[in-house]
Length: 264
Length: 128
Image 1: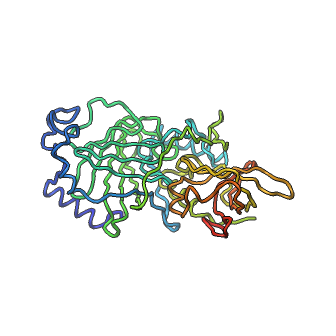
Image 2: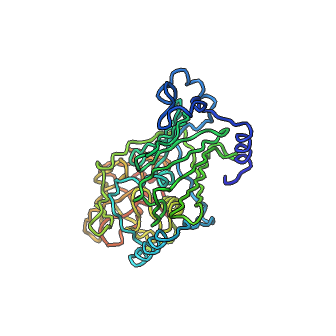
């Protein structure tokens, strides 16, 4: 859970020992935009054995429920125009029975970081040499986290998932994500600038190895007065697998011209 | 009938929503179209059971004061239903069941699934 001693120990140990798992990390200086030449995720052969040193994240994972007694996290500390926009959004929702108008189809995914905070639909985490792949059942969404030592591209295309690079600090996967599309809210009514950055620290709970904890830290010098931190947990199920999700084949919730979700 | 207790599904949705934002918003779409504080029990004959993402669905003929109404009941995701004991074969057309639902706010014949008493008397979800 949040701030557990294991997390701190792991991070301290990693910092002290300079622990790096990714095989290509030492060659990170080569190829600023991509993986090092002749190395990295595109050259997996000979590196599969190294994956055995990684923690056991097998099975599928459902977002943890917040205990009823536990308070909700505070809203993001927005500033300037971003704060004004949030206040306007709240006022509109309050005047409309709490209903938030949607500007996109319900078959359109939320992007980062909300994709990591989805109820109902589980996740899986796949390890291959030089990369971690996160599949989210909803909308059959895939995140790629490059762990082969590459950096972010100089001018990445903004996308729903952004561009993610990661490394292992002990058993903790540390992920840095940039280039998330500006028009995607990162919390209810909260937009961000192109400088928005998400750092995730993902690792098994010390108290319960069937709980995976993700600490998300969001930073944005234009939109946020200070970093915004959210912690979510995922519960393991080793017996089931992700199911197919073809939204357009069973979309019974179209959005009308007023932004209201319909029940078809 | 009024029932202020939220079903497990609603709790999980709200938990997720509170993580993500301020006004409750569910995973695939908002649940604000349903009156989650109200529950009705449908005396129903299943006409269709759709086991598919984003949401499983039950369509049923419901007896209401001597008339038959056709209802559509939205469920959570199949994978979430598996966690609660459901299978693709749990329902089939013709099954006589009692379905507990949170009805649509607009009064249309639809709702959000809360629980069910199956033809053999077994129960799934919240049926109290």
